[in-house]
Amino acid sequence: MIQNARIILEQMTRELQGAVFNQNTGIALRGYETGSGIKSGSTKDEIHFVVAVPNSGRWDLCEAGYWLRGANNTLMRCFEVNPDFNFANNTSSELGYNITDLQFFYYYRDNALNWVRTPNANWNSNQDIVSNYDANGIQRNPDGLPDMVEVRLTVRDDLGREQPREFSTFIYLKNSN
Image 1 (cartoon, helix red, strand yellow):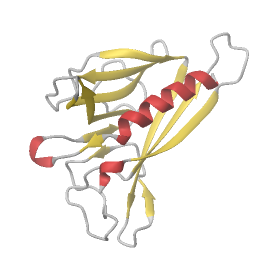
Image 2 (cartoon, helix red, strand yellow; image 1 turned 120 degrees about the vertical axis):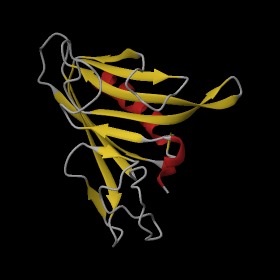
Image 3 (tube, helix red, strand yellow; image 1 turned 90 degrees about the vertical axis):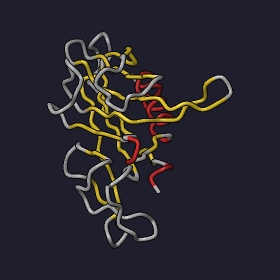
Image 4 (cartoon, helix red, strand yellow; image 1 turned 180 degrees about the vertical axis):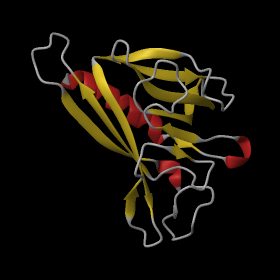
């Protein structure tokens, strides 16, 4: 269980730290609370974003995302090399098994530059929903990228001998400012 969670959280951290945002071109980060996502069969929170990845000596923009297929407790990773910034039609592959819960929480700064967690698991970087300020105290409109994403996942062992365990990490988004 620990190895499974570690590998998953490392993969998510690498990709989310490279998330980019550009309102003019539709490059966004979208987080969906359970039941409001875009992936058929998703039973928990979802996150979809655009990330720059190395490809044959240059950098390409790709769509990436994570969601939980509840029918068999499989964590799915979306990845599309030719982004249309829609996220709905991305190909998904299996990233982890025996995952029973997946949650994302988004953190931003208020006008006093205090960290605030969104009350739910929704985020749309192209909208102005929260009062999100950059490190210089200037309000972002639209909200842009969150400053940090908390990822929580619950893993059970495949033999059912141990109690499921929750693992979490906080991922600072380098490109949020």
